[in-house]
Length: 185
Image 1 (cartoon, helix red, strand yellow):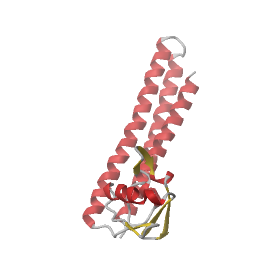
Image 2 (image 1 turned 45 degrees about the vertical axis):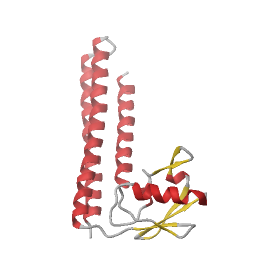
Image 3 (image 1 turned 90 degrees about the vertical axis):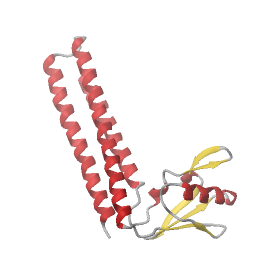
Image 4 (image 1 turned 180 degrees about the horizontal axis):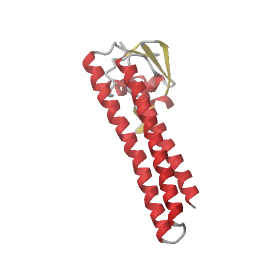
């Protein structure tokens, strides 16, 4: 019984790490990355649609992203959504393709981005800790109902704490890597 609980906690923590990694990828560093545009949604015929479902996004050069909408009539809507995003990019289009030059980051903008990724990392850590708390609560319920013994509960709690420490360490490593990437000139 506690094995299923630990397996579920392991899976959920892995998903929390993946979500944190995805959030980190949407934060702009000095290089062009198509993941920057993952959070952008376009209001297209009254439906909020993710950009990657409406266009081909590519990074042909280190400081350029191109967006080619499948439907040319959506070009203005895509351009507007990119301009209104918090990415600070200035799109230019030629009627077929939207080009997004990635400007070099200023020192102030780098510091802001570092603060942002620290906040995202903390959100990831909180998610992992919440999963641990819920699993601990379930273990207590199992023990109180007589489904598992006190020794099994204690072993499972220790395993859960080790798992939590390991996942938080992974988030810290992701943070360190992303911070280095942002501060790299």
